[in-house]
Length: 515
Image (tube, rainbow, N blue to C red; front, side, top):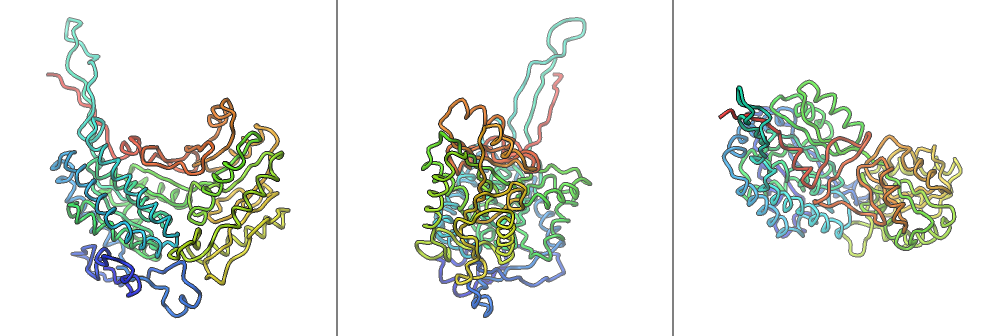
């Protein structure tokens, strides 16, 4: 159940999106009542946190037993959804779900801003981005390569005593089955629709475990899914706080009914999920951490490069897995690039995401603020220069950190070789293309990378040599529903989005017809 505070309810045109205290997740057969947990506004002030007014809602606290029941309901619903619906019917429902989210876009954006802290204009943009996956996979559902589709191939077998072909080789695509979806807090709608869209289109049923920090968007999507005609059991939601998250995760990983897990989050947790899923050999899609390089060559359009850097680095206060962390700038243009970048950074308005004119909100909690400050201090102790920022902003609240630019960063420092997940641009220089490539690839992760140049030959050469699943050339934001999203090395397995993302939820069956 969800109980919203009067403040949050007053901000919504339709408070029933959060259930109005009505149980969203039916827990029939579960004897344990775990109570509720608080959802906090990360943009709240210290006084609000102290007096309790930072609490925007209380959400049902669910554990392993609840997860088991959700899996059972998903399994019961699987046959009717997988085999009892046409691809066109599933497509229509996904389209209706998308339409309802768009109709309630301002409420969804408000909920996202209040529970994740991102500025309202970014939340509005995420609604558009999130619904694009439902729209895209509504289209993919009816393609010949979707569930129920496939192809035939000339038979390699011959008739006895002759050379005529015998039989038919047939390849059929089928839904994987019950899928568990585990999503993070930084994109509360898009990370759900990017997984649920292809899963439902393929005929799979799902059990979603959203982040304990941003469960409200998931609940609102569940309400709208029901209104769109998604049957009971097809899109289950399990809300757990931090204490019960491992218990829920263990059930999702060990339950043999679950055939696939799709997870977006840290590399460390992803590795743990791989181990936990080995006992039942589940299919895995893992979108894990990044540490993206942003290379600017000497021939680049500096103004365009700075704009791309701002978009990539400071969106969502730098809390995206594909945001640029390591800026590798040609020595001959460093001074101009840094000056223009710092000028743009100093124009970023920091504040509560719901306020007009705010360009950057808080980070998700106080712990990242401490980590960011420690990384800045360590970098400066190793010789880095802080051009702007570098400190927390306690007057706004305990979760705010100033947008920061550091130069002369040592590539051996912590801020360089670990993912920052905050609004800090760490800059070093290079003099040759080979040096830039080494610096860019010198990481255990391989999600995204960016570079700016006007040399067409270099574009093809350098992009081919980068060890990343996503490469942006002269652009800082490249994610889209039509493009495959995923990484190399320790940044994960599989792809999301595009036709490739649909394949992640399909099993391929070979049938030989001797008829």
